[in-house]
Image (tube, rainbow, N blue to C red; front, side, top):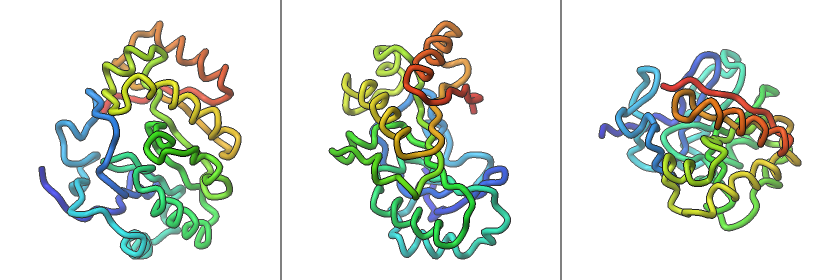
Length: 203
């Protein structure tokens, strides 16, 4: 495992922000199980978890006009570093009108032991949640959450609540990791929750 302080990194037209390596899941298909980075970037394993000041400095080292959006996504669950995430989102909103997104496993409420979705209002424009399966047993087998059986339901509740405070909420599954029948059930589940559904490519 190679470590560096890669706090921000470009992906397509977005600037991605790597806040933490902590994650309550150990998904069988997660890229960090085998690789140190994505898209041939520098290693995303951090030497230490950055402070807000370190994140701010990393963002200011970039030409923000180059990017179409800012995304909290790295080798960990962004809501594990909730305070820094919120400070950073507020900072971004003071510097640019471009959208801010969180890519999350949706377990932020369990991680922080409270409903964090109201805190996202006005700071986060989009949330992408890894649904991974409509079936709690398949989800638990593939994602191996440390919170066990309550994880799937908590993730669905997070999505439902987030839709009250965030303009765009999408739940996703990864292509080839579940059956097409499960994908159909996921689509129906998302419609019931009032959120969008998307199938991500396997990386």
